[in-house]
Amino acid sequence: MDEGNASYTQAQTLLNGSDSGESLVKAAEAMRLAANSGHTIAANNFGTLLHHGRGVHQDLVAARAYYHQAAEAGLPAARFNLGFMLVRGLGGDRDDERARTLFLLAAEDGHLDAITHLGAMMMTGAGGVQDRDSALGWWARGTDLGDSRCALNLGIAHAGGHAGEVNFVAAWYWFKRAEQLGNAGAAVELERLERVMSEDEHAAAVACTSR
Image (cartoon, rainbow, N blue to C red):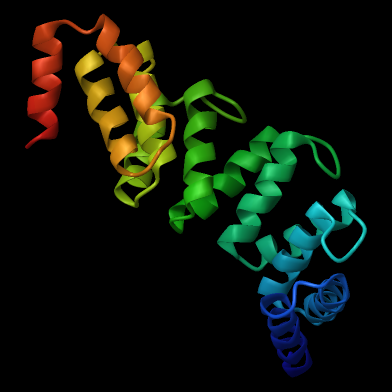
């Protein structure tokens, strides 16, 4: 493992230094050595390099294998990355059920991408039982952690009646939260929503947000 740590440090130094192609190739090779020595973060990082073809030829099958190595060791980022490949069918067969399990494990550790994707799968029933209440709960947690996508999803769910009855006041509140968190699409959603809201609904939404 000492050798793996040394190779990982070398790879990180190269990645954080020159952006030349030669440095990237050397960084990828050092990351590969660290991953093959059992370094968990290096395995995930080398999987990412393989996934996107940075410093190495793109190899989705190998990327999936390295993500699997790191996910088995419990790394949340690797669990998300492997789940993403599974749900998209990249580097092998599609497996929504396993992807949802991986997203859940990563979400429990606060991984925001996993929370966003888990909520979407729960909302639609992909990879398991449809559970809209849990989807809303995960997106609310993601919003509390600062993720604007989760806030936007909550707005869409309330505006479209996916959270029960259509609730424009709640939808406006969540779109506003998404906008405050920096979501570029939130302003557009707010504009669309305000065209169909009554004056009373708009007043209630503003009052709720200002509390």
